[in-house]
Amino acid sequence: MPPNFFDAEGKPPRWLAPCLAALVALTPFAIDTYLPAIPAMAMALGVEVAQVQHSVSSYLLGFAVGQLIGGPLSDRWGRIVTGTIGLAIFIVSSALILFANTVELLVALRFCQALGGGFATVICGAIVRDLYHGRDAARIMSMIATMMLIAPMAAPAIGATLLTFGDWHAIFIFLLVYGLLMMILVRGVLPETVSKFRRARRQRESRRSMLKGYAQIFRTPRALGFLFGQALISGSMFIYITTAPFVFMEHFGVSSATFPMLFGSCVLGLVLMVQLNIRLLKVFEPRQILLAGMALQLVSCALLLASTLYFGQEQVLLAWMVPLVMAMGAIGIITPNSAACYLEFFPRISGTANALYGASLFIFGGVLGGAVNAVHTGTLVPIALGMLCCSAAALCMALFVARARQPIEIEERALRM
Image (cartoon, rainbow, N blue to C red; front, side):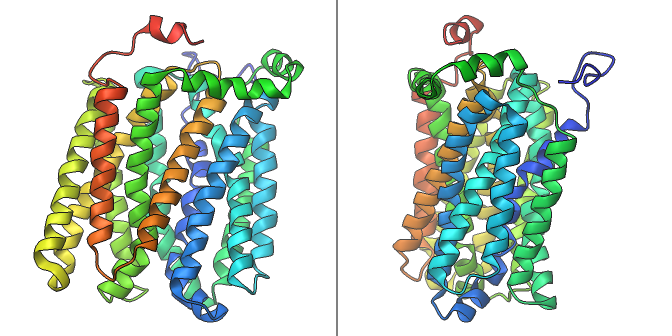
């Protein structure tokens, strides 16, 4: 890290959070910009919409694999080298997607694109843990979340706008350009937070030693409670994301131009709750806010299912949107705090820990989103029921495995360093 990196008070500069947010936003841009184009892509490739939606699940799974590999490599080689490799893979894959002429090739290339995206974005949480901890880490993650949530709110609108000027290829040209800009950011702006000494020491270790970090994490039950609790919350969110085109454009019959507004309303709820979280952190501990957020989402998902069962096929859009926005908004006060609590246990293997954290979110998201998509019944019941089950299981993990009502003691962390 450059000696002049920190400010006069010895703190990281304020510009670091928006830079990390821009890099993290690579994933929501890669997922959400092409959602409005899925029906048009299906028509162009001569397949059903559900087949093109598999490219969303393949991206989620590829992103998870990329994080699992990239996290330990970032501890071993450094954050910048790992980010550079990831962005190179992302850029090349984005270029090749422009020439995809079958849905199978599209799904495969999206997996490769996500693999690179996982390498690139896994370094962000690791950089935060390298420089912050406790409430400070939760506050910075909330700031990053606030800025990066603009991406999924804007992404469908960007995709819809690009579709008015061209076909679906224009969306992947946009992703290609964004990847190039992120390469400039990683190579020219972000600091290397892994010291040369730590890199040299880890590179002298055997490659098998990279797996020891994962073993250490799985020997820490309380950390696993935070990890899998958040993974289940992520599952509820990706159930919504992967089914959003069907819910809005097929079930409720909204146009592709209106879809971004409805999709973005949930993201707006997330942004507002993240802002609330930043203020709550001045008074409460991250684990306390986490439990309140999970309880709020559980109630919201219960209302969502009750509304769906009560109205049936006669359900109006407003009766679906109100509890949905509440459920998605609750994630804004869950995710930053669960990440801060979980990473608190692993100060020396933050890259590996953040890799497993990010991978679990997208594995659960990909699997659960794909599972709900697979049991498609033409109604909204499987979607609402799946989200409720995820929310209830997440709260149980936080209460009984993570024991989130109890403080995270410094001595408990030190035993695992």
